[in-house]
Image 1 (cartoon, rainbow, N blue to C red):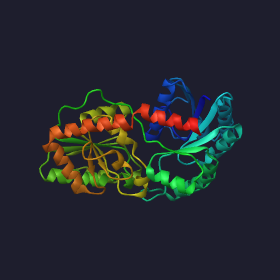
Image 2: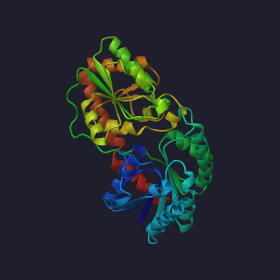
Image 3: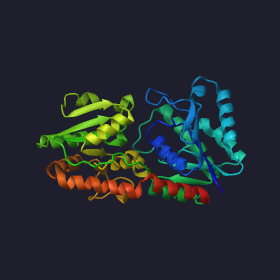
Image 4: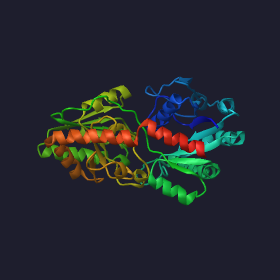
Length: 383
């Protein structure tokens, strides 16, 4: 039987951050394979970077955004329109599957119940364990909301037809807690970003970090590591991209006098890719936390796809894919190891360029859209 896939949840589409990209690349695969697909965005806060149209077509996939109705307080219209789209997209001649993100948001519970009664098979795409796990930093209000989401998610998981999980740790956790639910290990996918690999290492060596700035991200260790590299005479420069919550950005006051650090804030994908091309080392420095060990950073597969040298900490599933031949693999929370890795690139440019090429080959083998798309569709056909 042919498939009809509906993605739903509080994520922007088609433009967005990591989880949106994880979805969009599978939509790209389904568009290529002529698999029917729809996207319903239920609630996210729009900004200049995520100002998607409220409805439209992304290739062969139609999408609809309910966020404005929610934030204007038009709750009856919000649920009415959402149910209308869910019913409209149901195709009785196909296997209908609705995919939610890691946790079922409180406001999405009504949509979950409605889709379940209509006959959709429910699938979750889990990319983290609890959002209150060690390594996160949430407000009291946010913690209460997450606890309620986790409570209703436990109920929803038991009615699900299956779950994707992003890591071995999540796979083991789900097998233990929900032994009767089919599971599929689904890493992130990414396209190849650059057609040509780097041919030289710059002087100074440029290190790029892109993402958020919470405790889990380990940016303080990266800054300290680059500082140590500078102190031992290595010519290098750290470029920081992205932004976090106000309480996570206090480090900006501490680095303002460091001439070797440039903070660019949030930039567009096009600008980010240009910076990736320009830089020599792309850094992922998560700390050794439960949050890091159950998730898998989207930026890692994206970094590898550039063919540049990737520096990554040994957390979670990272060592299953990376080693000393295809990355600068370092222990978490170790600024000395970061400094030594930067120094190695500076002193061994030929070997470092080969490491980058090996990383690109790993991405093609493990994280290509084609490979992950085949796993994705195969699992949905079997449930």
